[in-house]
Image 1 (tube, helix red, strand yellow):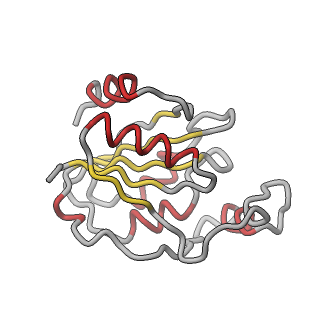
Image 2 (image 1 turned 120 degrees about the vertical axis):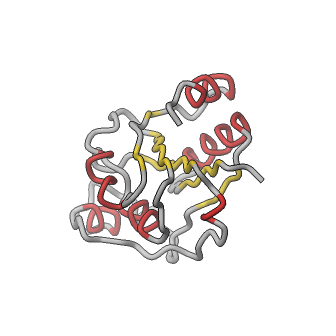
Image 3 (image 1 turned 60 degrees about the horizontal axis):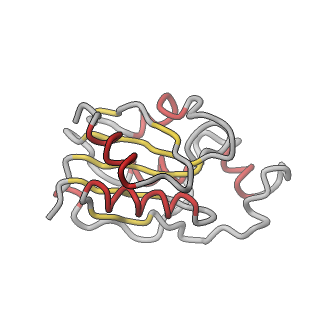
Length: 159
């Protein structure tokens, strides 16, 4: 079994595609972080301050429920965590995912997709959810990223 896991949350399918490319490129297992209550298009309307995603992102303590858990998280040394950038950070469901496990001794590597913004304060907001783990700097990828580009990036990480 691989000692690497690519875990991802994808609201529209873009991050899922990037996660699949990464997992193939580095020979990692893959796991979808699925919300217990799937997001609707209305939930994702960031222009509506009352939409579910807006309400969650405006509350730093928000921890949307996830469906199930990865039962063998202890088997992995490195966890690549993928997500779309929301409000210049990771969606709070990523905090839910990270806080669901004992990450002691693991290396967490964030990667994201974005319509135009960078990683913003992603690591600053994720660090408290990564107790005992080493959190590396993340990177934004376009939906059409190649396996070769992913492999080059992952190979250059200090794991």
